[in-house]
Length: 75
Image (cartoon, rainbow, N blue to C red; front, side):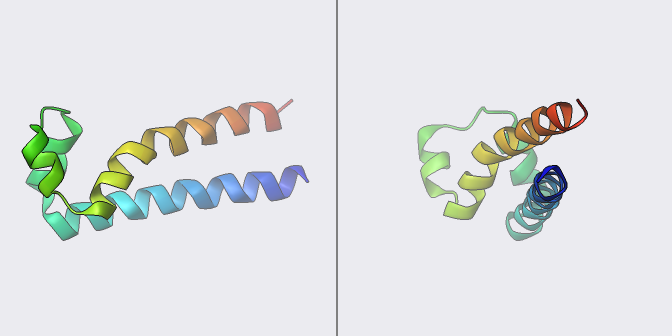
């Protein structure tokens, strides 16, 4: 069971990294970096594409979930 959880967490990390790369390529790097500053106006946020919004908000949760899972797996 622990092996499958570890594999799942690794896949989540890879998917997160691929998603960030996809977003950066799709909307070009300057827009991606601006979004990570959290300084967008509401209009700029609403004009962004849906996958971009999902990855910006889900990436921190996926990565933190990965580290929490790894900590418990090492016990």
